[in-house]
Image 1 (cartoon, rainbow, N blue to C red):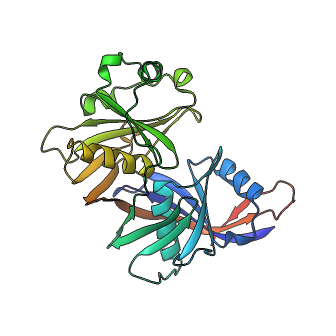
Image 2 (cartoon, rainbow, N blue to C red; image 1 turned 60 degrees about the horizontal axis):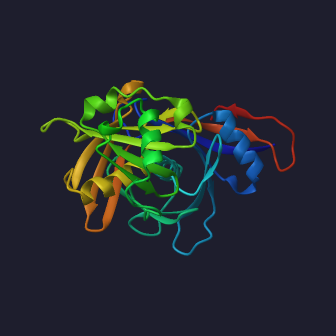
Length: 291
């Protein structure tokens, strides 16, 4: 067994326990991939991350991101949560911004007081969904008539999101997913709040393979930000709400600066301590102990 620091953080909410939780394992260089995957399944969080020494020039640290189903090259709330946990444990960036190394490359994370924001990576696939069969399946997955889908676009930045625009925020909040129809899809649904509301849009994220609604989703919000601002459906600076149906208070701060999109929000430290994990080839056995 090996002992590692662990941070449990809450990402994208100014209200305690209102965002998306993340477990961050520190000093994880000695762990093998199987142990990382097993612990991610054990936490049963949408993501668990592992902090490692960087290998790329210019990076402050390297991170591996695991869902209960496997590894991701990039994800949004794990990026902010990992950066926050690294800083809280004494991490010192070489420059003004924190630079994270992950499967998608180098991702800058900038600090704004008690908030962090990451630079959205390039979209790997960004084009309208035009296949009639896929559009019909999306509508069935959301239990909506096809005409309720005002627009749909691929927004793949590692996770293979498809963005779906509905008439308004109420339509988004009313969606009741058909998980059997959604299997294999990752859908992000967005609709506008009335002008003058606290938040410009309401967002929900559905992952059919996991049969789960994600509380607050940075990678999806990054893709949506590019799509929505490109079409002029939102201004270059806005706040998105997410997690409302789940009882959360997710707030994602979006800033478009030319071709750059920054996705930010508050990160709260909730739990700190140590975790004991098996070494390579060891049998089962995981334990969390106090600080």
